Length: 136
Image (cartoon, rainbow, N blue to C red; front, side, top):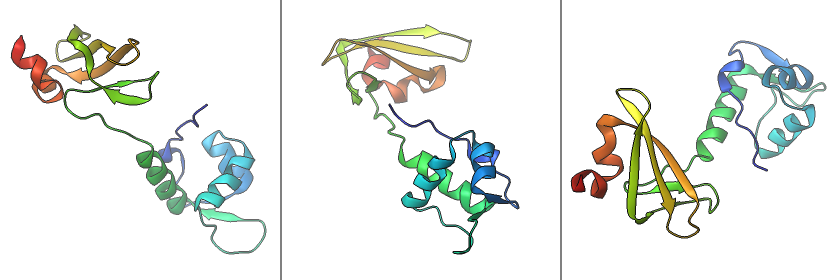
């Protein structure tokens, strides 16, 4: 199971956090903070108990969240089952409006035939699905 993305804005910039306080602030287990240390989160110093500067924690979480994103190229939609960006099967895509300015693209994966969805602004349809927008 993939780890959840912690909101970096829940950490105050000018606070210092102990392991327990940081775990409570980010709504994670205290062992997760130890895993973050192994992944590169640096405490203020080597003294015990370990204290973390809020700004350093926020930067670490932002970098961690950004590294886990995988934006889809134009003409592609992310397939959750394949865990890759794939082209829609037979080039068939359906746009379902949610609001007057945005909606969802629905398609089937070309590899596994699972349903795929991509949220998109109506103004960006030509950029997101260039082949589909010109054929309409």
